[in-house]
Length: 204
Length: 204
Image 1 (tube, each protein chain N blue to C red):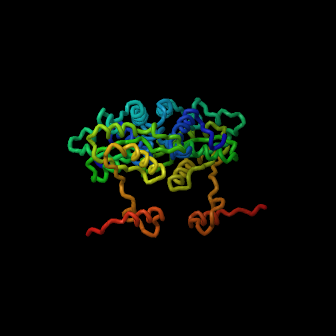
Image 2: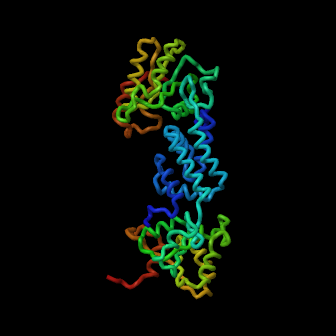
Image 3: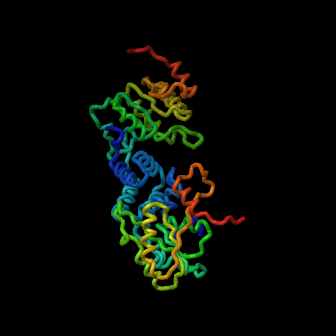
């Protein structure tokens, strides 16, 4: 018996399963499993049931494909939101981040990822066709591309732009530049170069 | 809706439950929950079931109180282990750590914690009476105290020593000193002081 052998097969099984989660190694998994052993049965059942329930019963909004308990999500169903402006994002976390700014009153379109040939993700794996379909219905005036500023994000931006080119919709992309409170000397050259090239008139 | 509000109550519930685990905040919990959504149902069921199974069905060795699937754990049942030497540890992780050294051929006694008035843990909450009982049965020659070198560990060591004083058993405590590969200049004064006081003849 060495340190990687567990005194109980139930413990070993739980540690193996927990350590499959991203960012959780076998030491953390063991710590979590031993913690669970010290908790009330009711609490651990609630944890396990909530995980199963999430995986089995979560739904997606039929309009924007965001995670939702209802057919149409709260944002799409909100009559005070501007339905003519659609912000294209990668996933639900990006929706939550933009909602967190309290600056955006339009609606979303959640792609479910970005085009990434390295990971075997092509346009057909994403909600791009449904975006084009939404735009073709004619009520949308502006599509804001808010994907991550990575090569994959740029590729996806370009692909969507080409797809929407003939629909007459305005396609914009979120501004890139130096981040608030970043120190200029530590900003990478590409970001700094784009920030210079994309300079705007000073407003006081 | 701000960043702490989730688009789905199922997601919110899962995130709440996951973030109850020690060392996992709501951001990590959200990341884990969204990861789970992308996995096969079978895999997530296996994870949830292994957690439930662990909590509901794990057992403890009747002799040493270590976690075990059987009434008597593998170590206590192993005829080649020295049953006359009992190493007293706090929990199963300490057993695994000592087994990892491959240096110890005796058996264990798992207390399930240390005396800690701050956390409301007294001697009655630990497997101390059962240790005294084990020693009184007469087949044990040495009890090795291998608790953490903390105030709580020292208190527990002292309590156990007093309890075993009249049984005639030899009570030893694991050596304290500077750790292998630690730099002397960064070693704390208490450790260094004890290492000096506990110096032993040099053997080449």
